[in-house]
Image (tube, rainbow, N blue to C red; front, side, top):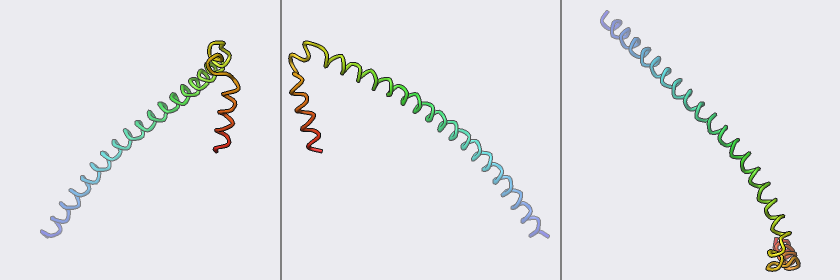
Length: 90
């Protein structure tokens, strides 16, 4: 009889521990999913900003290439040769 009583106590304690661990795991999983979603939203915003930055840089490059002072220091022929050399190296 005493053995059955000890077994009942053991199963009761293990059942409570299982429920507590399941609740803690669920809470941890909830915060993990929430953090993952936040990281995803942040990365989406960064990708949008990088695209805007890329367009701005290309526009700035185009404006610089058309600038008289820039062309005086960096003639167009020299830039073409450098681009051709880079292509040949690849």
